[in-house]
Length: 353
Image (cartoon, rainbow, N blue to C red; front, side, top):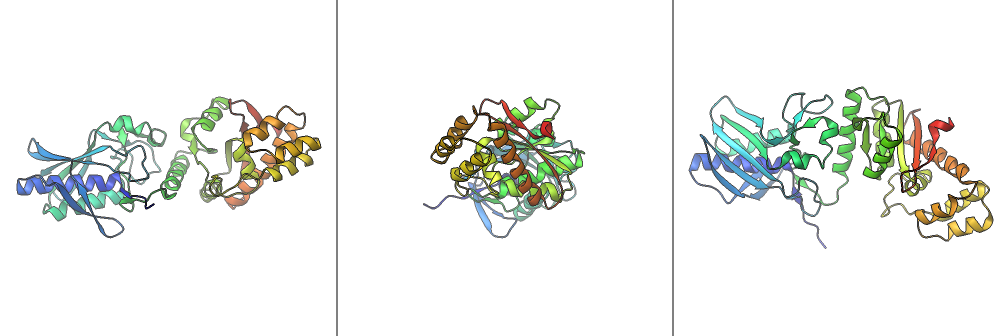
């Protein structure tokens, strides 16, 4: 099956801006427009509507994430274009966020329209025939949609960001998630965060912040399965320490040194876990049950009641921390909080230190 590509919020904004500019110049609303893409090539984008508003024209595009939908999939991106001024001036309107913290590619106080989409929007408007115009980008329900993104913790308030370095969305690409990890770490570095808190998802982050109530949301990033990548990026930025919040299954994979811990590419080898159980003094029958199990949850339920469990947790976190330091490329301090699925802390390496 061929997966369908989509397009970015930057391309949606560029298409809306070009449609509004053409309508302003030609007096009629286009059904679609052809826009330039940042990496070369072009894309035809359907126009939802285009109508007059005051002394300008307001056009709209529905953002399409293709077969890799995210929080902005289906969002209505609008552009209000007015003649006049010097050059093509971009503004963020209702539903477009405002940057309030350093470390992002847009200055504090500016609309969260990233540099590449800014160029793309200006090119699209110029292609329509306007060389002097004011372009205001808006997003319907943008403030609501932004709550489902990382914008609140990045200090982008009031709406979503207008993003996209390639203009199109490649289905199931890891690039967008990796970019989010980089951006979060950049903001932490710029804001003076000393120890990023890395978790594999929303639930593990929630449990981490419950266990460490002094941890601000802005010090946390959900890195999913990107064990190697997140540690490498933390090391590149010179962080001296990181705090991981994980569940048992991901910890076992990290202890095995898997760089990417998703089930598609990193099998959970319970026979290795059984060997570690034996090393920690678990009875032979328990080790056999672990080796013959199906899931990490089943293995955890087997070992958790045993008196040897703390030794196993310590072995796993020690091994995982060793790989984490190796992946960072430097002598970074790595601590782990291991949770059960109810949020109870099974092991805390900072207390053991």
